[in-house]
Amino acid sequence: MHTPGGKVSGYIVLMIVQIIFLVLFWLFVRYEKAALPSPIDAEDAGSANEHVSKYPQFQDVQVMIFIGFGFLMTFLRKYGYSATGYTLFMSALVIQWAVLMKGFLHMEGGKISLSLESIIDADIAAAVPLISMGALLGRTTPIQLLCMSIFEVALFAANEYLALNVLSICDCGGSITVHAFGAYFGLAVAMMLRPSKDENDAGKHEGANYVSDIFAMIGTTFLWVYWPSFNSVLAEGSGGERAILNTFLSLAAATVTTFVVSALVSHENKLDMVHVQNSTLAGGVAVGTVCNLLLGAHGAVLIGIIAGTVSVLGYRYLTPWLSSNLRLHDTCGVHNLHGMPALISAIASAIYASMVTADDYQSELQDIFPAMVGNNSTATKIMGGLGRDASTQAGYQLFGIAVTLLIAIGGGILAGVVLKYTSFRNLQKDEQHLDEQYWEVPALENKEEYELNVVDELLL
Image (cartoon, rainbow, N blue to C red; front, top):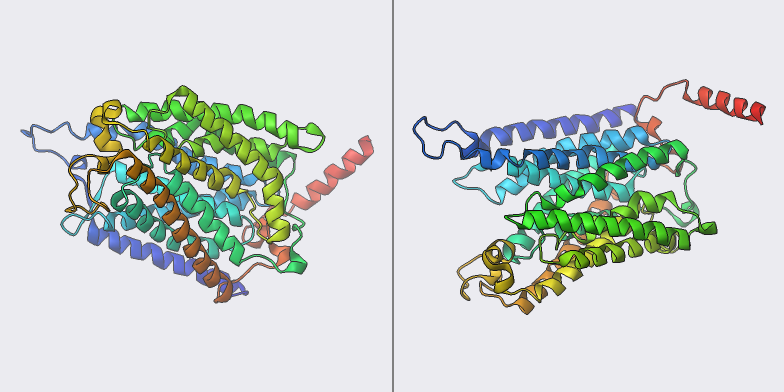
């Protein structure tokens, strides 16, 4: 697989996968009733507006996936083509796969119902392998990355079904099922692909320059602005507005905290761009699971402060320790942006769930905590039946994150073993973090860099 033919064969396999998707869509996927023309005399002829109304938020999620994630990973100075290009390629592939996988788990009459909400669901699912990609950025081939994403999305769909439908946990913004799963799956793969002891130092192209960091800040800004839509798009009723408010306040608090803590712990007390690009977003992750709950403004701000602090300290101290002691190279620091903030969100969900009362949530209790409504019947797919009390729901919230971590890490280890020890090509040390391995890079680039350096020397 080291030959040019080996590179081509991987893409041919992916084209075959796309054709398989075509066949599956033809056989199983049908438009939802709201997306079909209504009879002229139908009383519910205008019901399609229910789904169309979410299109603005759908656009916001699209921007986050295709622009936000892609540009956030352009900080590697020689890997911009790959960061943005593979984000587009992977997302287009796994969104289709997510529609199918999640649809198979909710089939009615042997068919998958296609609606705007199912596309939004699939868009959110695309974030999972993109988060994992951040842990592996520059250290895998595109074929490894795309094949990993197909397996990961299938496992993610099963875990999400287990968490939301069987365990019946609250996870409105996906911090448990999306962020924690993607982060720890990716870290487990990175652990399996870790370098040998004599190659544990950073690669010569593993780093940023002034321009690449500015491009990465574009990704940060888009993610920051649109994160409230990501967290609120699937919320029901007034919970959607609470999700927007809580997410914004948490992001704002995390941003202020990030700048302060970064200046306190960084070298010479100067701001670190890595912290600003990533830890400012940690509040959006940390509030995700509980964003539609009655946190109060103070609760959202507190979560943001904690997330920003933990994230910056993770980048400053934990990431270097993992790299030097465990040889675990987390290129984008997903453990600090997605992993630990997701754990904070899971803990917060248990705390707030333990305080839930029917008087507080009234008619929305059914939408947010369905297992807490009804009698203690076992005639349901929800584990333990209905009629949970608040403390039991809190326990299930913690059980949900534990199961998610177990499945994500176990699946990541399995995927890493397959990628490392089968016929997949593994990049050599000097091939990592370079676009030119798989992209046509302008031939004049090196010459232009040389000429700019000469001009700078003359001016000095």
